[in-house]
Image 1 (cartoon, helix red, strand yellow):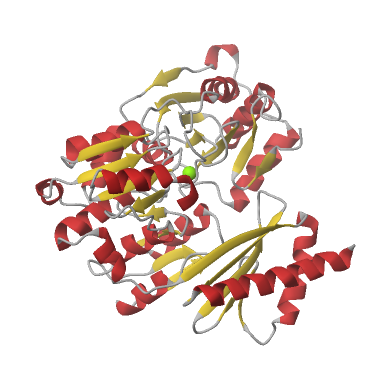
Image 2 (cartoon, helix red, strand yellow; image 1 turned 180 degrees about the horizontal axis):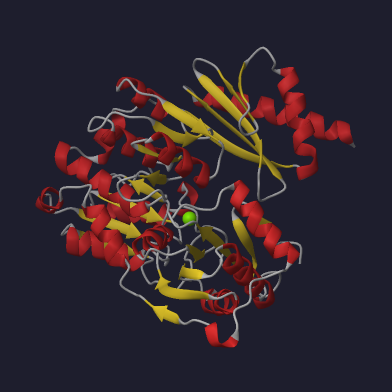
Length: 453
Ligand code: MG
């Protein structure tokens, strides 16, 4: 029963265990109180638990005097866009994203389609915990209406940033692994109907039964790589279940790596419009090199999409996102969006006439290693203080855990917000150097934890 996680990234848990209808209704009432009644847009991914979660949530929202627009199964970025287009007071997306199928979650949007930040999430949690909810009288309970056409908004916004005619001319043949998730229908529509591409479909039955582990990582995308090579496609796309993240596979069947998704978008966008790039501090240095080529810089923020989105909006950044395959293009929406990532790479390939492998070959070459270690959350601060002291003469960045930069490498150690683990990530020019840094810092973490026992 202790799998429930309530925090800045919303509320998530396992259905049938911690994520109960009682809890979901209370959260609905809390969010309804937080927005003081008003219109709330609600979308969900394809998980079979979505309807139960949705109806429990609706009861809470309606009880607090909200009206609800049910937009059905949609990608998270589509829900974010719908909140803006429908001029709602807020939104909720029901998706545990890349978590295993038994999980589900609520994530909350502000009226501008950006997630609640730490301060706002704190206010919502305070209302939830206090339990003093706004309650509408019987004669002011509002209704649930359905709007299943919000995909149109998303498609229209994406088409604004590319030359559809140029992409159509290339007659792309592509593969799509949508993980049987919320991106399936809208992505096929974008690729086939708008871009005139021929789509080889893999895991494109949007029933929420994930055919592989849902994170778009190399180990989970072997089938897609095989299909890309066998079917001689120009490019393969993989999405996570709520379609905010994407990873690409080359025409040779090579997994390109999710770090490249943002780097490719930055590389395409900066020559068009010079401006700042925003990314979290765990994102590859490839983007710093690309930004430097164009005489601009990367602003680094703590891990978490809201931190990237808010900073981008504040400073007027032209492109940003997270290294886990999440591209944020302000002309579309301040939300990670796989459809944007897919459209930008097709546009780039259509304009340049190059293959994905050729484009990738122009990139600075780095090796990144990501590992995690068990560490109870209460020890994280002490660990960070200890590491900081031990590395006091290095070039430190302390906005989220501890990152050390050298000319040819960096390492980042941080406590997870959602799991009792510490992540150790290193990137270097050579694989050996990255491996060496990870093992050195893992040893330091281990020594500290062992010293506590
Ligand atoms: Mg996701």
